[in-house]
Image 1 (cartoon, helix red, strand yellow):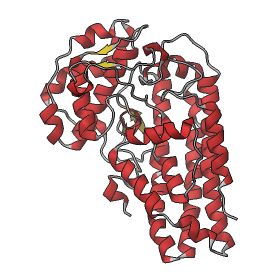
Image 2 (cartoon, one colour; image 1 turned 180 degrees about the horizontal axis):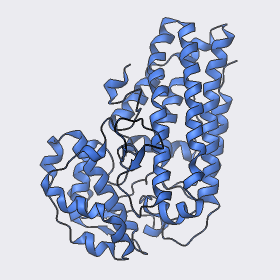
Image 3 (tube, helix red, strand yellow; image 1 turned 180 degrees about the vertical axis):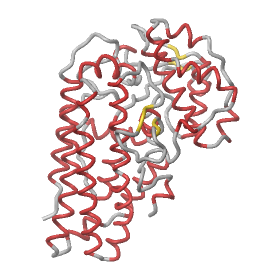
Image 4 (cartoon, one colour; image 1 turned 30 degrees about the vertical axis):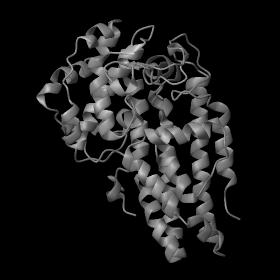
Length: 388
């Protein structure tokens, strides 16, 4: 396995290998790009739908089929923010998404093999750029490109995720290498690669620990989170979803798509695939299995092929090499530790908050599931699957 074959790299992991500020969309997107750049002002006006209803439908069906992928993904960033702003930007969500947003949104999503609303890939993976192009992808050198309201809390929330994803490139590259190394029976190389992964996890954890520095839990819950919900299991939409006007295949029926969530990140699923960590059936497992189809197609393929090809657990279990086993178990524990930190943030940033914002339930994740109970269970299952 080679990361290049999946549009990934050791330096950037799942992040876009281009930077969004260097991508120019065709002229017919000009009104869309302008509205997206002005989204904070439109939302602050209290009548964002008035302005978005007036946008033209650029009829991009043919363009979306054949355009360069980086342009399609950039258009997806802008349109998915506009769609979320349209639905959640006023006190009461609408029952319908107008055709001038629904048609281009679905055309872009169809090309990318994703659902027609904001995905993690458009929120994080494709929505950043370096301030100094000669510098690294680090928290002191990256910026968020497309915002909802904007401000330091929203920026920092996304940028911490970007920094984590960049650091995770080492995990993914070493995971791909370990598929071959395990089959070759090279214990020394496997141990070395696993130790590198353990060190990368420490760097990831250091980024994650910085979330509270510039993202306040109250500000997150009331100014960031309201815009990233989906339409599934959301009482503000009567649990029935959203009607996409002008999309014949939906036959005028509400569509219940899952909201953007960090659970759409492909880091931990790739580690579960490599280390062959399984989870028993529960509502969160079903939810995560469903979320797999919200990821970019190539990231899905990487996880699936890693799971199908990895023999690492059997290789380590059959070995008498204590150093190898310790390195393997350290990485399994790091995944559990990451889940623990996720759980802690879910509690402080979501579960302990309270508010009356439509659809922003502190007991339900942005993907539409009661998360606290099952996050703990998955963390404990992860931790239990070390090798003796």
